Length: 441
Image (cartoon, rainbow, N blue to C red; front, side, top):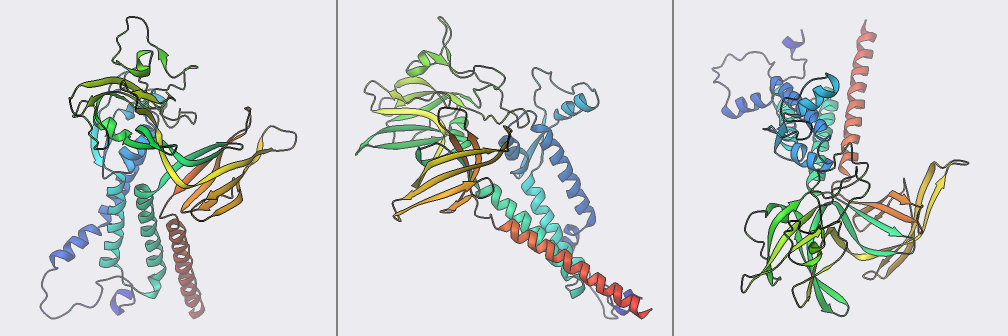
């Protein structure tokens, strides 16, 4: 038998020793617990649960919110009332909590995606240490599982360090900055001479977290920022007209200065991933700016990403401010030379989008023309520019690029190569073993 003559590839099947043996060490017992198949099954069940609720949550929240609250975190908060959404659609059920107009929240803590993913990697490593010998017969399985661990690590790196931005250009337009679709910033500007501006940025996440708390203090600003209200979204795709609306006479208005005296923004629900129609959340806020020296209020202002205008601050107007999608400035510029949409013959269906752009880098004295197509991106200075959008129906053709900066972009290719090679090697070993047994018959 294989167990008797040692022709197996599992740990712990050697003949019993006649010497006195002590019990397994504490470290070995911990490894046994981590390598347990019950632990493996538990992790798979947790994965199914978090994927189930994370998928349902996209009906209410934006994709970025779902990723942050369910998958890209160590501890998630599962909304049990999402079960009501599921039963209403598939089982004609009733709500467990809340109403259609006010769904409410009934959250419980749950292991997040990071916790489950790393636990799976540890379970896999422990299983190989405890149960499997490193033999050539199982070399394919070792390589395959190494590829899985590399794949999990690559996703962890992508979740924490990858940055996705956008760039939009009209034909002939040049730009040296990218903008984010899910991050915002409150920026303050003042002239710095030579046609440039000094810019002080306060992240939108900091603005959101400061509601009802102490004012935000920046050493390079002459005033502190006290946040009265933060609106995650001020745009509703269901409304034909969205954006700033006039303030009615006698209406309660927290703004005491700036554009907020004439217009206001409505707080809307976050745009869900499945109902957004490619729309994005456009946040806004009411803030009171207080002079650092006297502590007196300079004014209460309304800022929002739907208000595309810089507002002067104070009586002298030296500083101007705006709330906008977060920008990342580049040491080079990109100019759209020609934007083309090519349709299938005799149809209005697009066959191909492509943009001819010129890259101007004053640092390296580089100036060259590049063609960006749907399946042929531009890779430059650590960023990849994908052709993602195009609008040729207006007075000028407009192109849009999705710009990805991912330090672990090569990791999935390495992981998939390891997995493919491991599977092929393991099947080859099994095939050779099968042929040898058949030849001995």
